[in-house]
Image 1: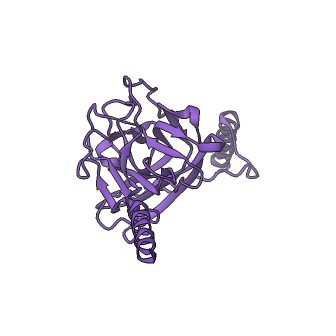
Image 2: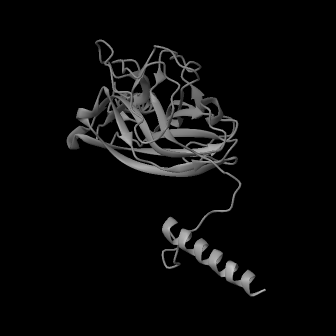
Length: 276
């Protein structure tokens, strides 16, 4: 009898352990329906860097590393990426980011009906090689960060994040969206995406699901997940001339005063010549 009890307990522990290791996997939100058209976004700068052919958000198109089949329910740590070369958008100098636009497919905030995400921007070259999620790692510099609260009502839309940072000339802009583990609160977040075409790859990293470094969504088996995630800003032009500093404490002349000064100098010159 004791051996049966021991065997049952051992099997139970084994099943529990198996469930603990298998509860997180890459899966979709399960939403269905037609893609939803969204505004173009990018209102604060003259340059919009966007790899998406369309900003429409398609229900059930994105995946995240999450536990949806067994408790604790919710998403694990997930990182989503886009990388932009400013030169591809006609920017030859430094690029000053003024906002990032994040596509949201769905947000389920658990008891609070809200959940946090963090938008980070980096500069560097050669992404994704050597990139470390959350820090950038060697060869990449963090240039800006902004925490955002996402509401359940923000699904199937674009969320504009006012974040600033400057990408030096010759480097790339890397945008990272981080969704911290939401299983304690039962929260689910899915990035907005579609399958309508993209000029460059979308990336995802989720160590809990075995993706420790950014990998393309196509490489992990979800080529339809073309993330809507882009930035706006302005080129910083270096004229090579010294900066002009205006000090209101220093008196200056308007055109009338300048004309009077020239006239006075002319009269003084005339009398000096007469005396000779």
